Amino acid sequence: MTDKIGVSLLKNIGVLYEGDIYDLALLLLKVNDAKDRGTNSKSRHTINGVAKSYSMLANVDLKRVMAVITRHGLPLGAVVEHDEDVVSHPPLKPGDKVIWWKRIPGGDYVYPVAAVVIATTAKRIKIEGDDDGQTVVRYVPPESLQRR
Picture 1 (cartoon, rainbow, N blue to C red):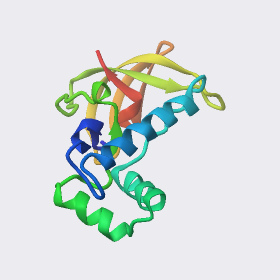
Picture 2: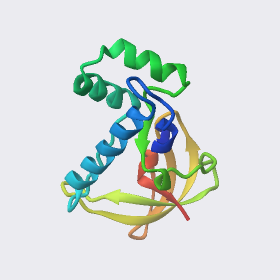
Picture 3: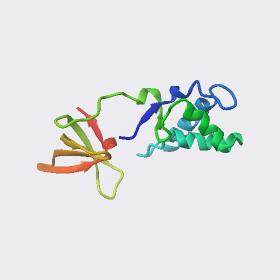
Picture 4: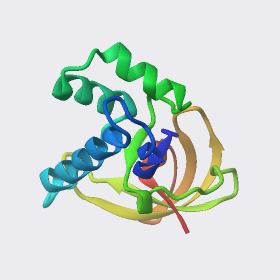
């Protein structure tokens, strides 16, 4: 699963002033939300992406920005999300009941399929579900699952 961090974890990080990384990350979240409104997309920046944006915007060397961020121990590949959207659930395990939001081929629509977790891998979750009366086994990305 992709690590997600709440934007408030960036509050005490400062390159030019305390909280400047947080301020930019919050702005990027607002811009992404506005851009994605009315679509099925959800655009987000990783910490690395926020650092690159900061470097470009503030005209500060990227290595300097990265050094400040890594001193705080945050994973550069983590996705920055609104605090209320970061829920700390234990990882899915075999036997957990889930809803698989199955994407309709060729479209932007999804529909719910009741499923059970069979196994997990580093990038996918193996599930078994009832898809229109047929039992199917699929390897799906964790972001397409919801606990039930």
